[in-house]
Length: 83
Image 1: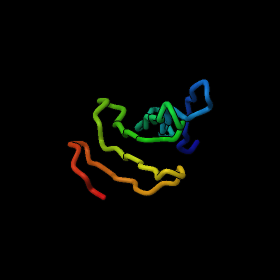
Image 2 (image 1 turned 120 degrees about the vertical axis):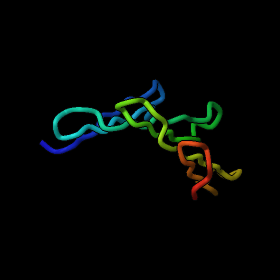
Image 3 (image 1 turned 180 degrees about the vertical axis):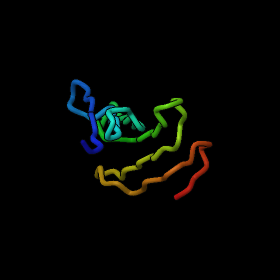
């Protein structure tokens, strides 16, 4: 068996969590997704190490007035911008 993913969705069909499993069935890490309540667009992804639940990084997404992505910023576990 190879590694695989499991997904959770909210009532609007937005992916709210993605869990990454190892080939032995144990969870390696997970990603939580957050959406803007007004537009429904994804505004952030937050990455965690599953063993200790420690934050490992995040990505924030910004949109223009047309709803197009204009900037994605990555942060390390301490909130420092890395990209």
